[in-house]
Amino acid sequence: MNAALGIRREDKNRWERRVPLTPEHVLELKKKYGIETFIQPSSIRIFSEGAYQKVGAHVQDNLTPSSVVFAVKEIPVDFFEQGKTYVFFSHTIKGQKYNMPMLKKMMEMGCTLIDYERIVDRNGKRLVFFGRFAGLAGMVDTLWTFGQRLHWEQIETPFREIKQTVNYKDLDEIKEHFTAVAKNIEMNGLPPSLTPLIIGFSGYGNVSIGAQEILDVFPLKEIKPEEIESVVNNPSNKVIYKVVFKEEHIVEPATPGKKFDLQDYYRHPEGYRSIFERYVPSLSILMNCIFWNTQYPRLLTKDYLKKTFSKKEKMRLRVIGDISSDVNGAIEFTEKTTSSDNPVFIYHPSTDTITDGYEGDGIIVMAVDNLPCELPRESSQSFSEILFRFVPEIMNADFTITDFNKVALPAEIKNAVVLYQGELTPAYHYINKYL
Picture 1 (cartoon, one colour):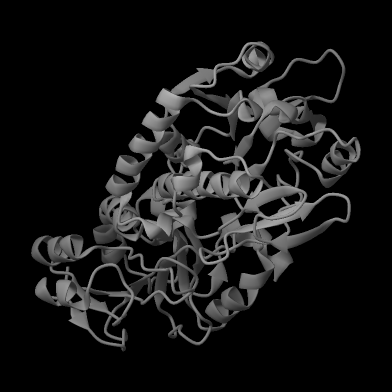
Picture 2: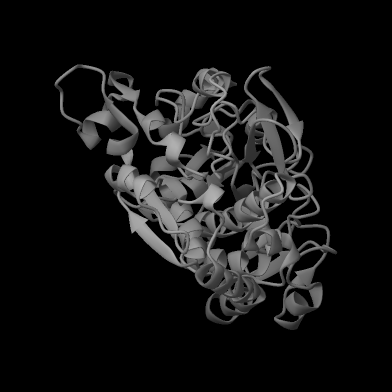
């Protein structure tokens, strides 16, 4: 094998410092497989240009010598070269409108697109992901939001000491600081107005696992959804209650008397309705960690919130950490995604409007859409570790063969080829309707 790969600089925003491949793996690719790396210079990348040069990479703007270009986030339309292969999170497989011009350009240029999001095993489980890190950073940012909100309400708690993820050096520092905050809660307890403090998680995949990993630092009691009522009636002020909601807690069959069936729900979501609202009054924080698209019932609707707020009852739910950050998605009032320098907004149910920040009447939504970049070093190392095993086979594939079926690629990668030589592959023909 005598191939060269390119690594594009990330420039989506000033927080995007991640890389798809670390210097350590670039060195291994060269030593083991003879693969050269060309990497664009970047002043913000978490690993320095020197670190890449030290392992023999070529630092230059021009990536023409490379046959395959790896990136993390979307690529600008003027970047693509005729007939080249690109591997990145394209955010096109749901027909995302804002990325259709990019996809069209790739088609015009006869490019091949491999999307990390679609590298899955035979059960459809994702193999190359940043999900855990979205969960880790999302939980930190949500607890920071909660602390700020309570301070604004003149309720002083140890959560006030928590910072945003971007203001910590790394994950170790976060966990060290959170351990100190946790001790404070264990010793001094929480104010009666916050007790019981119940934090709910919708979903149980990589994102939810990452978010729970942060919360597990605190004095914690995990409860089942059906135990919420008894906890509300007999709470402790020295623990945080954690509850994970699975599909059977979130929806029920619309047909009376029919039993919940997970596979049936996946196949026929239109035959189910949401029952999640029954749990919401008891939650203080909701972490939304589920994959959602339009055929599924929503977790929370604007209508539900408007009715609840009009009753003038004090609502316990203060903050939603919408890690999935689908605009008007599972959380209908996620009106926009946010960024690390402006991470939260308040949704005002009575007027159906939003204002930035955590002050005012309503529910706060944290919807940063690029959370893993708040932990750039750890998330890059983890991602590179997983991606590395697929790189030699991608680099070895002959993308000039006319017949896509004859291209030698492992099944996991072949499934992730969205475009081949500018044409949508059979599994992705449906995207045509969005173009």
